[in-house]
Image 1 (spheres, rainbow, N blue to C red):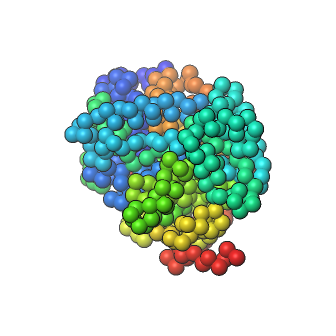
Image 2 (image 1 turned 45 degrees about the vertical axis):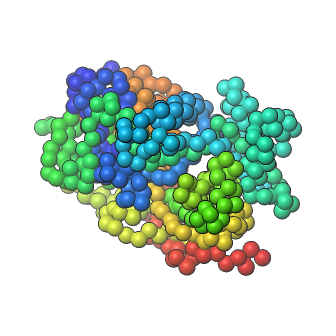
Image 3 (image 1 turned 120 degrees about the vertical axis):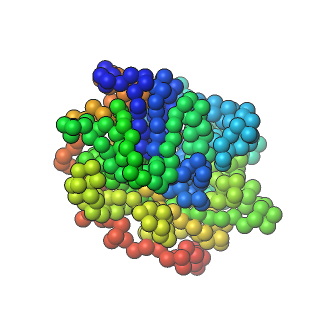
Length: 499
Ligand SMILES: Cc1cc2nc3c(=O)[nH]c(=O)nc-3n(C[C@H](O)[C@H](O)[C@H](O)COP(=O)(O)OP(=O)(O)OC[C@H]3O[C@@H](n4cnc5c(N)ncnc54)[C@H](O)[C@@H]3O)c2cc1C
């Protein structure tokens, strides 16, 4: 059942040009919808999703983990597997493109994704229930040979035939645990790696434009301030921008990432804006420290989760970027930021968690919590002492939306035929950039015939009991305002703490 009035020529407005909005736009255009316009407050045509040039969306980043290991959640595993196939195709298409045909920020020599592998390193010598479920489900799909369990006799025997000479030794023990007499256990997923998030967004915007999608970008023309309602007040029929201009839609997809609850607070019952903390380590110039550039290169160093995926402090990291930056993230605690928000469309007041980025609502110096810095430092000190010597060079608060069960939300707003929410990435949405829109189109066109994964993305409620922290609200322990913030002097390492 398509929305009754929606034809292939109907004006469709998408709010947000992050992973969710871009993928939706691409697949809608490819399905023949000829009047798709994406609005974003960021001038992505100018800054090419560069975080150094003001981009602060979750999707604008150096790197994100691409993994298909999803424990017992086989639907996400399958979706990730589909995504990997398209990431491969996009890499090939980009390298075959002529430089002059590419938008700012992209070169044919860029790689949108790097299949460097993902190591989930156990620090207690055993594998978690998550790892066992993942292995079961990957085996079920006939892909067990893509996984290497460290210390498993069969996997160790076949490793020399799979990896380049010396690669397995480096990638299974990047923390030199064996040399230190520590346990060596974990799983290495060879299908995984990282995606260059900012470049991937610039690429998909390019594909969208080639397919006829229009973009309206920038603080005034691209920033949506309110929604226009039908005379009955029931249906969304367009948007108003900060510039004061109205744009009519027959169908609107709200894909504003962590700003989704801010723009449309009714979603707060099923999603909350939270923040993950990230620290950067800058390697010295390549000619001064070639051994570090070599050691942390994607050829020698994997994406990692230290202490496993569901256990430990929640620390994970990436190989160095082309600029010599090693990013390490902390997802042990995701913080909330409660503020008074007035819903512009209705004038109703709400108290909800909203983003506070380096650039929004006004420019501010980024500071991550002391708890996050201490967690990152403790792992770096123990496992990557070369980085400890460098100290932390910078940090970022990366805002996203967490749902009550970490499943995304891709569904119409109950009672409103003109609006759909497409958000709730819950810290794992980016990898699906190549396939999310495929599901969105199916949901738009046949909302009652959902795939297994799309069934999980319905508008839903869970009024009582644990709701992934949403039940805590402002009084909960994750409230950012209750945290002590790290100061730049906390970024340095006191190596005596190692003793
Ligand atoms: C610290 C961190 C680590 C993560 N790690 C991973 C990972 O390893 N792997 C993975 O797959 N995923 C990861 N994620 C999750 C992933 O980044 C998100 O799921 C995904 O990027 C969300 O995309 P989005 O389009 O919903 O939101 P966003 O990327 O935030 O995009 C929302 C867009 O809406 C725009 N917007 C907001 N308000 C307005 C307005 N009023 N008018 C117009 N436009 C507006 C914004 O400018 C922005 O461009 C991580 C997220 C974080 C924060």
